[in-house]
Length: 143
Image (tube, rainbow, N blue to C red):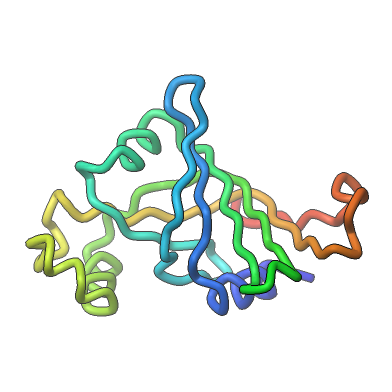
């Protein structure tokens, strides 16, 4: 297994649960991931949302992806960074046209928050791995 396997699984199961921290309180929400590739896992939100403020203060996250029947799980833990590259931000607006409903039509709009889990580790889990989670191989990515 490698990061491409993780990205493929995430792209097939784009709804994930993303955990952040606010102070000492964990916060979890379901998000529709934008896409994943060998460089990481990409998301879009708005800068006025709590998730954005939480990530600004603490970039450490964990994302949980699973098949519809929960038979296979991918857990990704790592750090996020905000994307400022105008080309990537423009691509986000093009590929996620619903952001225009929030008044986001230009890549330099400060309301648009594009972020990436760019470094960390990931691993797969199935029911066959129950009670063996600590022994599962981790896939490191980023730098």
